[in-house]
Length: 540
Image (cartoon, rainbow, N blue to C red; front, side):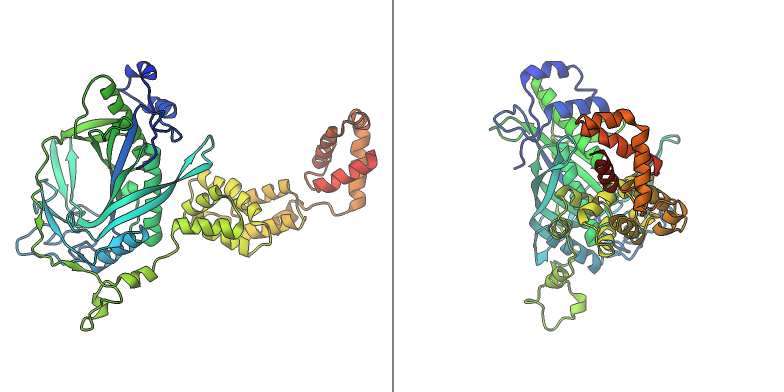
């Protein structure tokens, strides 16, 4: 079970009761900071939130789950539809081996038990964008069960303190997607696009081990990163490749879980956190006022920050699950059970897929911390930004600079400019070799730290110049002539008698002012440590 997050007492409720229903973005943020606290305990909490997730991840495949139709985002409507996708009579499904292998790999990465024999079911319901009248899924005997996902929750004022968390994975099942309904309000009609019909999905069901929006969002982000690392799903939420349903309830400590409401089809981790926190507070408000929570399906309106009732689930829909007669049981093998009379190319081998598993995000973070001595929160920043680990390690290979100094430049300067310009790592005008050359110049004492910042700014402009060329053109190299530097220091001393008098009276902190004056005269080309030594010698 997850640690409790929400903690709301009766004394505090009066001030918020009047505006719980129309909560806006700013109000939900204030209430979240006030009443949702991951550090609270059951003993101090009046209400506890309970959150479980159902995540639909689109499989990364060139063809659909049961047909050879191509998969392409934003293709012209109904241009990627086979006879099977359109449910023409006489067509039969043919299972994609690639989709099965992707599901097995995902299950292994999430510590699941892979069922060597799983089955497909028909889930009957009617929507206009589901022409066949049922969905082929694996509700009763899925491909993978009983896994776990480890993630970290960032808390604290600067969100630099990480709390390790674990959510159980109930099951992973293969299923086909439905089409898409396009509503034309101007003509009061609905159009159907079947391009998405039959696209392969993994439904990943998480147990109700989370307690607030931040936990759920962190878990989804970690899952998204794992899928992208595996290459089993692009996980692009903006394109609908990762859609989340959240089951949310509240209860008092020691009491059974409350009635849950389901918030459907959330397509952003940020909106997921907002939707869950709003729904927790809404349910508490209803119960505090003597009402009852309905078992219903709700939608999240990102403009208002509220969840909205869609349909009642009290009368449970009968999906009339039945075995899919056109698909035999899905049999998966390991090295010990491969039949001698079958072609290995036609089989899905668990052990072979396990050997192909890449370094997973959590393992990569641990390796970075152990190998380079960087902080754990810095390892999260590196791993969570696509391509940044490779950039960092390439810089490390090409320079003798301490990794902790390199990470400072990458996070505080390089990554900051990427974010500011909305760029990815591979779109940067500063290459690893360019940054390595700059850091080598700084480490060798050829330039000062302030000059290095100027050189980096010039490198970012992407004019094709190297760091050393920029240093020479702009005369940013440190002054190497010791006698020349002594003359400059003497001139500064003679020009600031008041500061010199204070130092001679014992106030050596004023020395920093003189050092700053030398830096201004030399335009940052004097080594601060050398300037300090010269000034101290002359003034003592």
